[in-house]
Length: 68
Image (cartoon, rainbow, N blue to C red; front, side, top):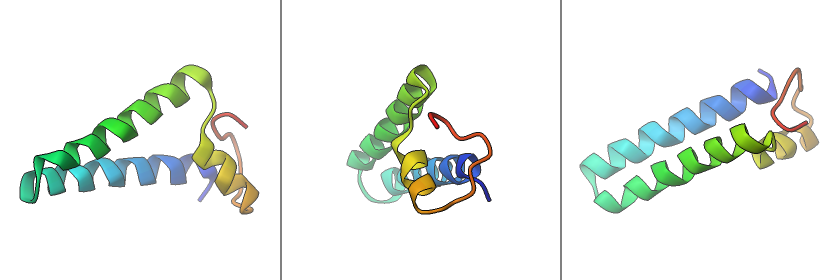
């Protein structure tokens, strides 16, 4: 799995998890969805992604990661 796929998988998982927690536990969990969405928007606009840089430094294969 390359950096792009990991970033997208983690973001999608966090969004689905936060929506489930919002429905099942507390409406405050929706802020996690807002945070992830804002980070995806920022990454798309600036072409810089902190998570992709961290994964690259950890040695994950990097085919065409955002911001690298």
